[in-house]
Image (cartoon, rainbow, N blue to C red):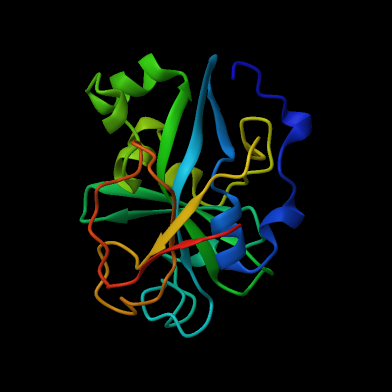
Length: 208
């Protein structure tokens, strides 16, 4: 894929749905980001849902704070936060405004701007460029300066999946609470999926 037409981008209505549904349906979608004259693009192959209710692992679980303010924005808002003091994670806000739900982007299959991503990441290993949330954010230069912006603009948007991938589901990775919720979704057999070990025991295949 070499053409990324903004007029075909996913609308706010796509994101303003149940978070688990959005997390599944984002698999196969293409994330497009323009940085200066460079077009970066990657196919989403792994996501995690973080819910507005009954999800102790979600940043919104204890209510609104300065850190998670963007998570309570409109559907399609970009929520960026720092983990482990050094890495960033990029999320897409879902459902209605003020709900506090989002989908974590965990892995992409790089499609365009690969040399630029390689410089960002300091590696030429294609499979390792975006195979984890911190790697993905670094490769696409997501930082707190973009926190609260929108995935509905010409410099940052998503195109719908061309085909419906086969989806595997598991518990989420790297969390210590709500570890058995089946909220990690990934394209079955895709080599660009992260190698993180799920915190819980759930592992299944679902139909989209």
